[in-house]
Image 1 (spheres, helix red, strand yellow):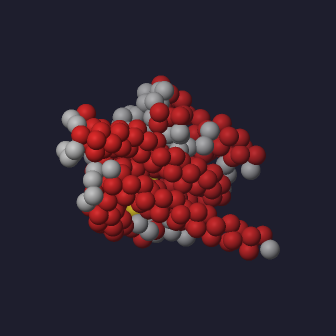
Image 2 (cartoon, rainbow, N blue to C red):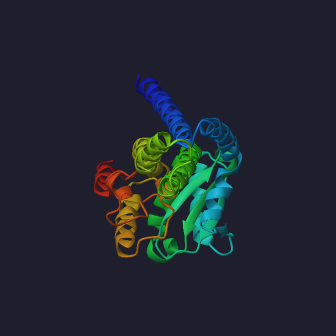
Image 3 (cartoon, one colour):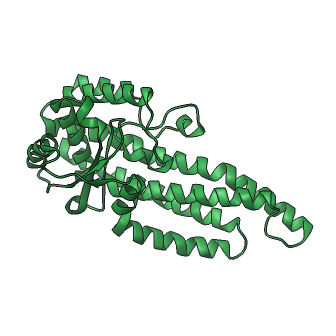
Length: 289
């Protein structure tokens, strides 16, 4: 009975995620429409190309954003030792491992499926975390891979980035007087562009938040099961959060949901709509397991 309910809940989660991905695509179309009669058609083509392209190249795009480089077994034996154990426990193939040259400790998973998965870690991970803590972090990322969260989150992140970019274009178009036409039409166009520039990025962030939050709790739980205990991950989350507070990572906002801990700090509008659950709640749940 419990297994059946778990399967139904999983199917509902994927159904809701599909609806949210459709919402992101529709939002992109609405942003395109603000650029004029042909803008919506261009945005539709762009959305289709983006979704197909991101299926095949999402990992390469995100890794390129952070100038990540392949991490060899010789350079990081402890990382690979942990992954050897965890992939056996999770019955997953070994992911490719990449290194981000960044002191702030953090990690994320990306790729279109478990056979083409990537785990990326910052250089600060091995310097700050113990072996058991690092193992907990890697187990969390493998849970995302097994649940196929990383493709959805990567596509959502890139889509949000595109929407934010289009919104920025809309802002500059409004500043320079819209796209021509009669004065009344131009005035309406400027108002529409300004509304797009302000509201579209916020809407994209809210959708990202809805996609990401429940998946973090699920990955924490499954990761603790892969690692054999929940204390390593709980302790790692405490350290990662303190490190991010002390030295925030220079992260691309649209990709923040991919990381195990929100790499962004400050009082920006992005942090008002954090895509990550409260870290203390995550730690509490882990310690109660």
